Image: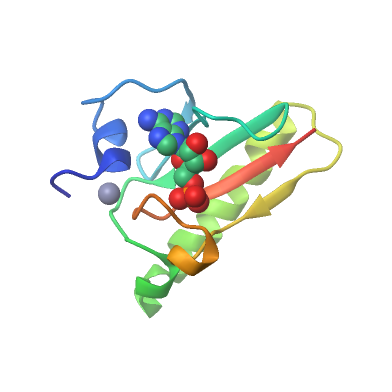
Length: 104
Ligand code: AMP
Ligand code: ZN
């Protein structure tokens, strides 16, 4: 998606501290971490918000959660939070779906 920050990170047009990547997902460090560990789990497919997902995206969302679980395991995290902010009123600032993985 033209002009989308997270698409540009996924396409390597902008720098980010990428910790893991597959054909479907890229995981990078949040530039303004709210906790000791704060990763963003981002689908390479542009979907603006959870609100904009379709039935065809069910597997993609399952994949995001399991990619986050695997990233947490690699970081040896005993526990963590997984969070989607949805819409401006839900705190979403970047209009490309991302799952926050947060741990103190
Ligand atoms: P949200 O409020 O759910 O849309 O979260 C957007 C997140 O993206 C925030 O936690 C920001 O700190 C983070 N962020 C913004 N720009 C960048 C960037 N260039 N690289 C990494 N993280 C970013
Ligand atoms: Zn995008």
